[in-house]
Length: 502
Image 1 (tube, rainbow, N blue to C red):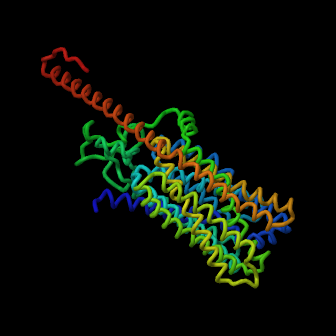
Image 2: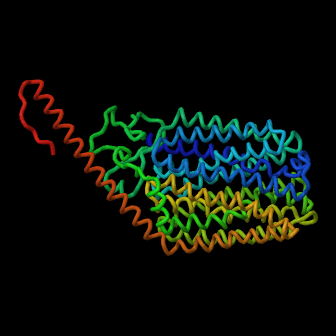
Image 3: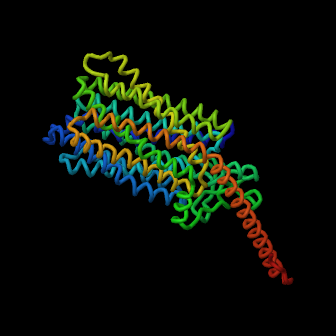
């Protein structure tokens, strides 16, 4: 295995590790909602509305504008320093949650922590799409998605076991410090991959992209990093993609072009209903199982943790099998992600309505893992499909939009659920309605079957034309430079003749 291959897998591992700790803090509060409510003097209705609804809404509401801003910047500037900054800002707020003594302070620190989650995904997948081609994107998306799922499960388990014994605040410190270490590793061991360097159309034309690991490099004029060959800047014919594949300067045009992409639009829309059940599982279900169904906090936490374990398995299997299907047809992973999302509803229905104090604990754990496994197969395939149908300079914006629809589902979802609980006076009824979000999301994903092939082909054709035009301009600039240099040599020797620059 060459240095480039080794370096890009090392970089992917650093990004995956970062996601573990970024997403670990997402649900640190949920296992201890009743404990926090008691400290702040909230009744059951206020617990669900203020801790389950308002805090989640604040967390993701701030993440939405941050996602757009970071997505815009990711398409135009160096992404690794930006990623490190996002981690420090968001996880700094997570760290200071330990020192909050009021509900207002908790609301503010949780909202600020949304910076890291909102800004991370556009950066991660913009970077990964320039490190790996379409033949690897499902697997790499599964790696990062696995980090997300494992992080959520780890945070849930940590808070569930540490919180009752040592206080609900301590887990926030435990997960924030490793995140700072990951930010330091990014800044000191990684460099920017070449933008657009892994596109099939570019490879067909002889382009080559950087892998993202620490290598000899030089800063180019547009803020990217140019790989050198034997210490020399390559010629125009051998120049790396990052030299010639320039992003659009008009950010609004980038967003408008995304909205004209049918596959991308469907991917954005499926996240709205599809993320509602995730908000249920990670914000309310732990407390529901312990307070409404009679499980202990530790037992309920283990059930939810096993849901996360199932998620990890679904991400790995979904990524690997989706990659296999992608090699046969770009439509087949779409069928996989639609069908499995719908199937994931049924074990969650069982968990919500049949698990209780007198039920089999083993059966509860099995259905929890099964639900997480089936529902998580969709994630890596959604992200891989979005990478395949968008241009290199659009992907930061594309994942900002995807993250925004996810945030609306995850953030507004718990808020809406809390309102539904108040209106119906019954948690169980509201929760059952929310699970149908996976059914709707699966139906929208199924519609992508009819659009994905055309949009993927159109994307590669645009990349091919853009790259060809950029190469022509680079070669013309090089010829001009060579002839101007020749004029300078002749002037210095006293032999000046007219040389036309073409």
